[in-house]
Length: 199
Ligand SMILES: Cc1cc2nc3c(=O)[nH]c(=O)nc-3n(C[C@H](O)[C@H](O)[C@H](O)COP(=O)(O)O)c2cc1C
Image (cartoon, rainbow, N blue to C red; front, side, top):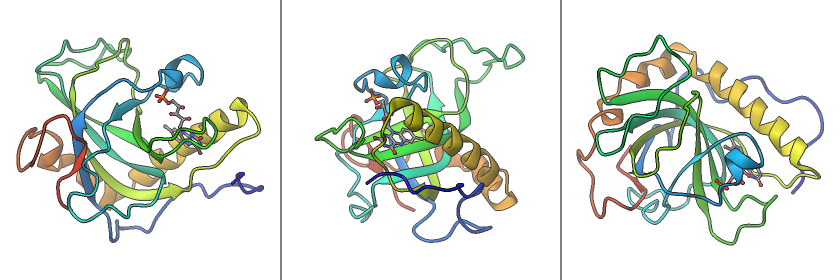
């Protein structure tokens, strides 16, 4: 499906997150096809999808979502950051994120994937780090595009929509949720699986 023409909504979702949100998902960061950084200039941290049905959300629509991501660097080197005022006295950090769930119709993937763009400049990759997500809203369905440039433009708009949407009081509050920094708490199954850990 091609994207609709016309201007996009500047903000997504109601003033307060509403059902099925918040959704919590967690997993170890794995390598995707590597196109995010190289081809699009928009790096993504991918997590395996195998457990997305846990918590009764197997029906989660493909599309673009926004929320917060907590990263645990205890088992990986802390990547340096372009923001030199940030000190990493703690090994976990919470950042705004946009997430793509689906088949990437532009690339015609045959496997559904979870790809998270963390809205922060990291100087290096950090495969193997644990990531916990709180998904707070839906931005749009996935589309097929006539060019790579139009895909990039829409992802850049998603990032701005997410930034504005997360700035609302009820959304900012979730940044403090303990599940973003307490890794390995209340999770079932294998560490390797991306899984919804309850809502
Ligand atoms: C916010 C966001 C929105 C995206 N929207 C689409 C989309 O509408 N259609 C699409 O085919 N891919 C979309 N993608 C997926 C990118 O194509 C994907 O991240 C890229 O192919 C890199 O994948 P890789 O890490 O597996 O190499 C989106 C990715 C992000 C982070």
